[in-house]
Image (cartoon, rainbow, N blue to C red; front, side, top):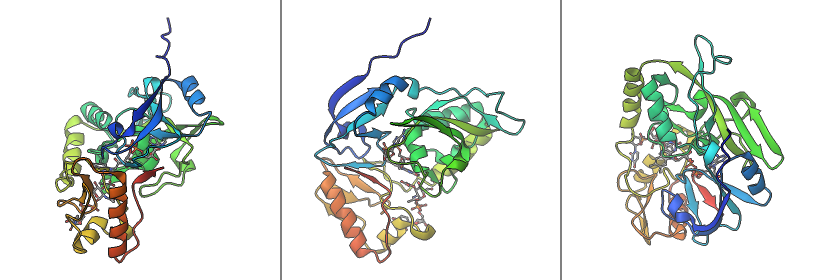
Length: 287
Ligand code: FAD
Ligand code: EPU
């Protein structure tokens, strides 16, 4: 007996509830559970929402459909695929783009599978983390990718990391392309070793704020910490409305409660006008 997917869900919702900044107006949210529902959702202008951990969404919301990946796009098959694996490489089954990354990283550690421990603490979904090639100096998503399934209005295709021009915080995946599933290429290790490497990578987060925030605002220019540059410009604690540059790490803007997207944008503009180095935004701004 095959179980049918839950029905497509279309609701008008405030996007603030889906973002780690806690900001964002309304949109029509399409929650899709399988490829047929996703294909239907992609028949009109759309955006795809992941964990909402790198997004500053306008207080007016967005006019496009906002697609959320659920159902078969949120499950993960971590069993070793014997037809693709070798003695040195453990290749997994498919992992949904809508699966939460933190839970995946924890489960890999439990199984003693190595490859994603550098991404510990990134509050993303797998698809969003791949789209941004999220990572830290201890490792990034593309280190552990074997293949990716990508959906566009024209259809679904499978690519390998080598097909994409990826790099620091960039995947080469287009804005209309949705990462629906990935396979990982991992190394066999032990839970103790993987956990030790995760603890090490997690130490680097000790100085990051625990408040509502979309992570680092700017990419590090030429490998220099943007946070250090903003800090040296004396901007920690700079506040507009209820958005503020964190007192702990200057590349984080935090929501003190009731912040508006416009406040965050005004802070970004101010930082750029003060810091003497061109800063490229890491956030995605909607619209
Ligand atoms: P979202 O924020 O939902 O979306 C971001 C972009 O990805 C949007 O353009 C969206 O359309 C696109 N997208 C989302 N899902 C998909 C999909 N399935 N297919 C195609 N496109 C998609 N980032 C780091 O790199 N390193 C860090 O150490 C780090 N630390 C962080 C710590 C905190 C406390 C926070 C809040 C954020 C941090 N971030 C970090 C930023 C953020 O977690 C990453 O940028 C992450 O990749 C965003 O993924 P997401 O699923 O939340 O995507
Ligand atoms: N520093 C300051 N003042 C600050 C912030 C940092 O002096 O306000 C100094 C620190 O003392 C340290 C150096 O700058 O000597 C580097 O700081 P940190 O270790 O925090 O690293 P980062 O380069 O600022 C990057 C990523 C983070 C990632 C951490 C840990 C970017 C833009 N940021 O920060 O990623 O978590 O390393 O690996 O690449 C993100 O991308 O959203 C993100 C949070």
